[in-house]
Image (cartoon, rainbow, N blue to C red; front, side):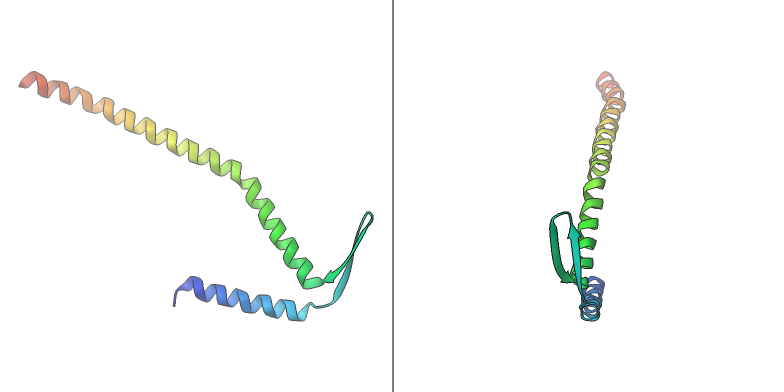
Length: 95
């Protein structure tokens, strides 16, 4: 089996155990809203929300790094083409 499948199965089992152990009802009051939900559901939703926010905050950095890599590759290719030009000229002269 692949390591990813095994890791996914372990995480799924841990999630089920966590959910079964945290079935207590909690009340969330926010201004004029009042919500009753299980503790496990609340923790899982907040975990996913936090991961999503971290990913969205990381995106600009990722785009900037990808742009820098593209620019450096283009510059390297241009530099390589410039370095090859004198050899091509010398070949033409010798012929």
